[in-house]
Image (cartoon, rainbow, N blue to C red; front, side, top):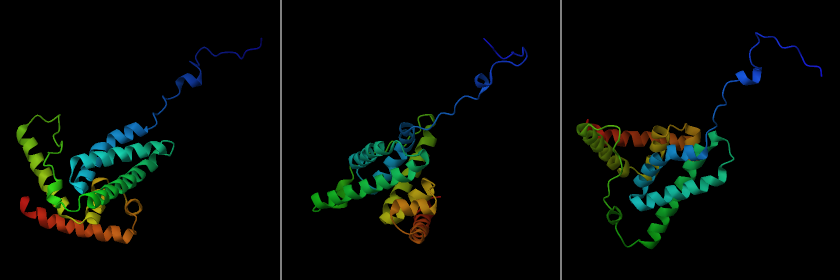
Amino acid sequence: MNSAPVCPDAGPPLLDRAAPAVALPTLEAFLADTSARAFRFAEASLRHREDALDAVQEAMMKMLAYRDRPADEWPPLFWRILRTRIIDSQRRRRFRLGWLTSSNHDDGQPIDWMDEATPDPARQHDSHEAWLRMREAMRALPARQREAFTLRVLEEFDVAQTAHIMGCSEGSVKTHLSRARAALQAQLEDWR
């Protein structure tokens, strides 16, 4: 049996000294991280808590089919699927409940906005007031402007990704975003 001589000061073999493997992102972790923002996006569009929860759940279920895609493809793919689910839900609602006014769709249930790690009631109240003002200002925007603002500013997608998700040109995204920012600034200016 021929074995290579071992140097006593060499230490353990090279494989034992290798850096620990970097954990690859999982689809479950991505969905868990995105779920609250996705719900707020859907709720702002649908104005109905249960419909928003359904849309997000359907989008997450659909994402399971894309588990093998690279992780960097998941965000734009998920947001495009969610947007499609929201549009489908809006169409179903208009078809089934066309005789109701849009104000009857709001069940008035508060969104879970509180930060559990922040026990300060004054801070929670200010956060709640800020969220309510922003939510109402966002609801007042046309749907395409709301989508462009949410995807570009809140979700931080670039213009090309946002255009892909929205199914429009990059110029349209820029126009919708510019109009949304101007409208939000006008609506929220007196609140500062």
